[in-house]
Image (cartoon, rainbow, N blue to C red; front, side, top):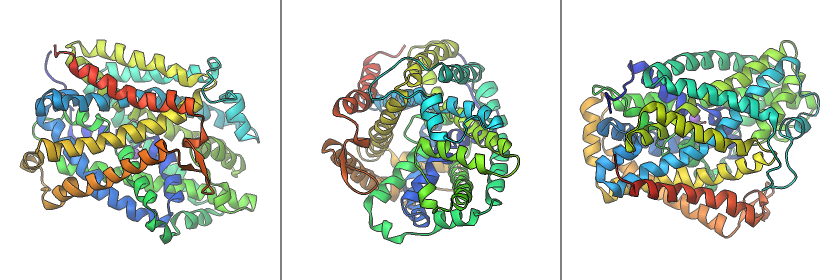
Length: 501
Ligand code: PHE
Ligand code: NA
C-alpha cells in the first residue's frame, strides 16, 4: 500500500471528529433521554459519565489510533496480535450494522426537508408518517416489499456517501466536514433562536431543566447516561481509532479529545433547548402540558415536529426545512465516519485499494439497508438499533477497557504516549476512571441489561412488565435482535482468523 492518508490540518481532524460525534443522537435522542431521566437532574449523571468514561475513553482511542496508525483491527493487532485484533473487527461489524439503518433515517429527514415547504404532512402527522411515508406493515417481522418513497432518498444518501468516501480522507471526508459542520452550526442556531422566541418556549425549557432529583437514586438513569455518552461520542465503534490514525505525528491528543467532547455536549444542550422550547410552544397552543406533547424515538422528530411546524406563525415552512436539514447534515457526517471504519479495515487487511474497499463495503451496506426501506423496516430498525447499541457498543466499551487496562496492562504506556505530545497531561484522574470507575459502571450496566433482556423484564411507561423490548414477540427479538448482535461477534472472529495480506 502507498503512503498512508493524513488529515490536511488540525482543524480538519477536529471537524471530522465533531462531525462524527454530532449526529442524529444529539438532535432527537438527547432531548428525550434527558427529559425522561430526570430532566435537569440528568445533567449530573450525564456529566459524570462524560468525565469518567466519555472523555477518558476518547483520549484512549485517540492515543491508540495515533500510536499504531492503523484502522481499528490493525491498531489492535499491532497492540497485541490476534488476541486483540478481533476487538477492532467487532467494532467494525457493529458499525456496519448501524450504517445500514442510520442511512435510512437520514433518508426520511431528506424527505421531510422537502415536505416542509408545503407542509405536505397535513394535520394527521402520525398517520402521514406511518401510512403515507413508511406504509408500515401490520406485524413486526413482516417485510412487505420495498417502499419506493423511502428507496429513492435512500439511494441519494448512499450516492452522497460514495462520492465523499471515494474522494479520500483529505479531499473527501475532511472537505465535506469543513463545509457541513459550520453550515450545520449556522442552520441549527437559526432553528434554536426561532424556537426560543416562540410563545410558551419558557414552559418547555422549564419542563426540560426542572430537576427531578428523586431520579438520581434510580440506577437506570445512570445506565442511560453512560449508554448515551458512548453513542453520542462515537466511542467503542472503531470510529475514533480510525479517524485518529490519520493524525500527523505531531498532534495534541488530549486537547483534541476535550474539544470534541465539549463541542458534542454543547450541541446536545443546544438541541435540548431548541426542541423543548418548541414543545413548550406546542403545549401552549394545545392547552396541554409539555409531558403530554413530548414523545420519544422517531415520533419526536417525525410526528411531533411536523405538528409544531403546522402551528407556527410565519415562515414555518422554512423553519421546518432548516430543522430537517440539520438532521440531514448531522447524520451525513456521522454516516461517513461509520463507513470509514470498515473501508479502512478491509482495505488494510486484504491489501486492496481504498476505491475497491469503498465500492465493496459501502456497496454491501447500501444493499442491506434496503431491508429497512421495506414496509416492515421500522420494526427491524427499532430492534436492531436497541440490540446493537446495548450488546454492541456498550459491551465493546467494557471489553475494550478491561482488556487494555487489566489484561494487556497498557494504560501506563498509552498515558505516556498521550502526554509526550499533548499540552494537557493525563494522570491519576484518567487512570482511576479507566481502571475502576468505567469497568465497574459498565460491568453493572451489562449485567442489568442481560438480566432485563434474558428474563424479559422490560417495562412500559407506567412501570408494568411487558416482557421483551417494546413487547415484541420472541421470534422477532431472536431473529432481529440477538442474531444481529451475535452476527457482529461471529464475523469479527472469522475476520480475525483470516490472514493479513
Ligand atoms: N455520535 C453519533 C450521534 O450522536 C452516533 C453515531 C455516529 C451513529 C456515527 C452512527 C454513526 O448520533
Ligand atoms: Na453525538
